[in-house]
Image (cartoon, rainbow, N blue to C red; front, side):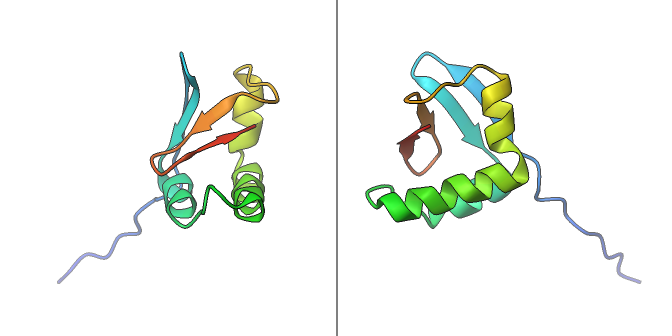
Length: 79
């Protein structure tokens, strides 16, 4: 009999780097891949998603401030 399991694709990582902060994993990568980083509305949508899943809280907890660069695998935006 095959065994069915549910893959947890919700985990993500926030890392402080010399260039700002790096975020990756789970929904972060999924939504960043769909984001047009040259479009303010698209980046605002990504920020909303990050806020809902707790990434923005973790960025603030780690010391991120307004104007710092946030790097994803697909692009960079300012906090």
